[in-house]
Amino acid sequence: MVVVCMFAGAAAAQLTGTLRDKDGEILRGTPLVLSGNDQIAGSVVPFATDPATMQAIKDRGFNTVRLCLVDPWYEVQSPWSFGTLAESLPHIDTVVANATALGMNTIINYHSVGEHHQLQNLDFAKANEYWDELAPRYKDNDRVFYEISNEPTFSQSDYLNPTFRTNYTALYQKVRTLAPDRQVLMWSFNSLDFNFEQIIAAYDADIDWDYTTIAWHMYGNTNSTQKIQDLMTQYRAMNTEWNYPGTFNYVPDNVDGFFMGSQALENIGSSWTDWHNWGDITFDNLDNLLLPDAIAKGYYWVSEPLPGDYNGDGTVDSADYTVWRDNLGATGLDAYAPGDGNGDGNVTAADYTVWREQYGTSVDDPGSLTTSIPEPSALVLAGVVSMLVSRRRSRQ
Image (cartoon, rainbow, N blue to C red; front, top):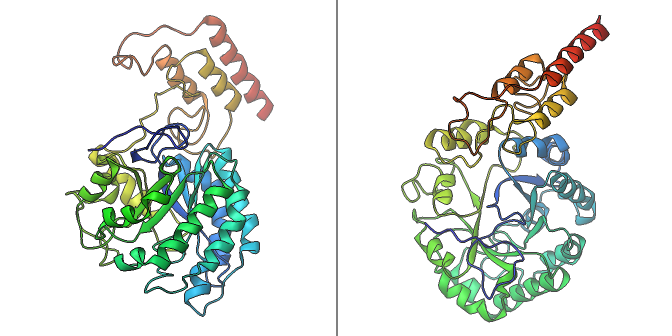
């Protein structure tokens, strides 16, 4: 297991382990898609830009979205309709703003697939067009990361081709110049089958490793992360895509002996994002597969909330009463929202009871839930009674 705590943008001779955000947290994410394609735009754009979508992702314990801009794939490799970057920019701005407002991270991903395989499109014209605009646009947002390509080729020899290497390096250096403080995710390898060391050695002299992360996808014929663990002892690496068991024949079974890719990645201390179909605007995979697996097998990364700790500071005290009081009467909330101690989505007198019974407990006290706790002050109790009576009268 490799766990090295290095934060994005931190000064170091060479960073290793995995990419972490400004808070020092592992990135755990899920994709959002933007596109002008007429088959999916009407659903994916409203879903991706809705603040409620971002809140729902955060409520499930994720701190990152991978924003996949898929129009380059539609434009470069198919006859289907697509949107322009100019049309997408307002939507990109909205997603980034929604994430930033919640303290979440956005990985902006130029998402074509195999665009340069067999040495096609070696001028990287479309990618350069995108990053000319995107790189400076969010250069000062320390919640934004740039994934400059997505599975650009499926061939080891393409990566080593001098023309490919020169033009891909030029794209990377452009982004570094336009956004010198942003972390760049390179390569986004489409499988675990590559000789990563050989490819990285060919680019090494031109890479600023303080601001660069090796991106890779958990696909191919290899069902071990040993190559990645070896990389993480020398470089920083992150998985930006893994898919669910049985979805496609290129999704390996039981990587490192684990049923779900997320568990294998948690086990090696790697940041990650899952994957789903472009047009999927549900949380079905998260709710029915990933989260139940993580909870059942004990690798879910979010600690259970302390009952009654409505402000999240780890202690149940009078400050939490204030949160409950200010939210009393709220309905239709997410489970365990501030003031909702029993998880029913409403803030009522029952949640005051939760707070009162847990008053004085702390996450630092392992026996706090069963030990005797001090009673809230008489003044607080009097205030509660007065408030409840007042609110009942106002509704009559």
